[in-house]
Length: 209
Image (cartoon, rainbow, N blue to C red; front, side):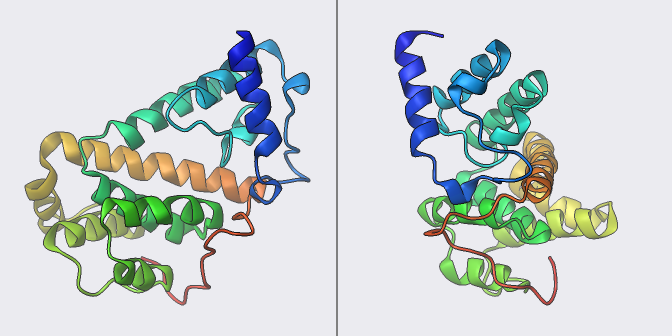
């Protein structure tokens, strides 16, 4: 690890909000506690577009090779997907709500707003309701991801609506995104990672998408 990256990693570890990490199940790793393999992966994460070891990464670093492969998949799906950012972030919020993943919702809510998702749509989703007033492309993403999780398959009608918006590559990218963030959310829940104190937490949901 180069000196500059070492300082960057130390800074990220030192400034990370404590509420974003699970103190009991996976204590936050310091740079000195990391093995060479863990430091290599941590360096790749903090020097990439995320610039942070928040979320699932502190837990994933316990298995460095798995962490490296997963973070590469996540970088592709989040930053280089064929799915437009507004729809991509919407799908991530749908996943966060489905798993009651507070940290995931808190991290991606502002990104979804920046990408153009309506706050009213996010509010309905946060309360476990099918959002009202969705644009046709948003409804296609919602119905596809919700139906896939609920029934473990997708009807022809739902598939065709999503395919009209996304095409072949987009369908594959959206399905992969949903699966990846299922894993992220499962990791966050196993590690008991909470939203930062200044983040936006999810309200209890009476129903799930």
